[in-house]
Image 1 (cartoon, rainbow, N blue to C red):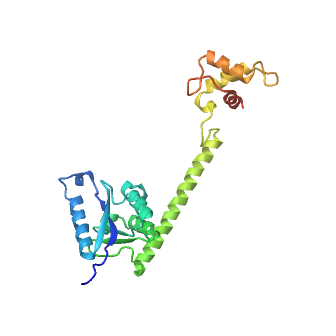
Image 2: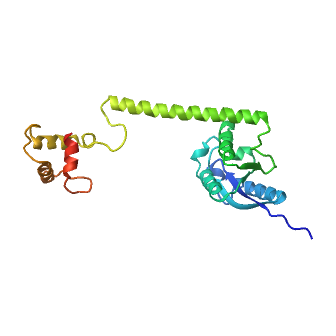
Image 3: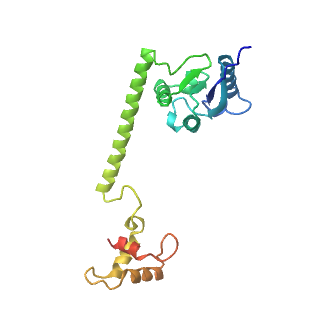
Length: 225
């Protein structure tokens, strides 16, 4: 008697493109699920999980989709190395977005199969390889451009006298508080009060920290710096 071959585990990925296709009475999700389950049964795959991005546009970046992110977590956590989708457009409609998602899976040693049996991760097609190289280069360019844009914004803010990142200073949040603290200190060479005395006076005037208690000496020091 022939020994039954163990099925290869796979996960399903489903994407509905609009809210109109979401819900028990809609056919987009059930249709995709039926196509995926039918192929898995014919090809000998055991579906162990399903990940869905509801109302996600085909052009939406792969990295912003919660369902796809959860799928990657599952792949990295338990060794499943096959993803099945209804067709390439369900994975992503725009070719660049599609290829970036496929690159993310290829880098993890994953195959992406359609319900028709097409292998979207096939590396023998020169045109697909070229497209992946273009998509990867475009992604790197966009990432570098974004980093440069954010850096430019931070530099402009610093040049204007503001604080670009990290915890905001009291001078930015409550300039009147800092002004009062400096008044209570008196001349910098011969301060009239200690840091703790200044904190005590500020409390009497109604100035307290975010927890509703008197400022610490270190907070007063940062105000006066």
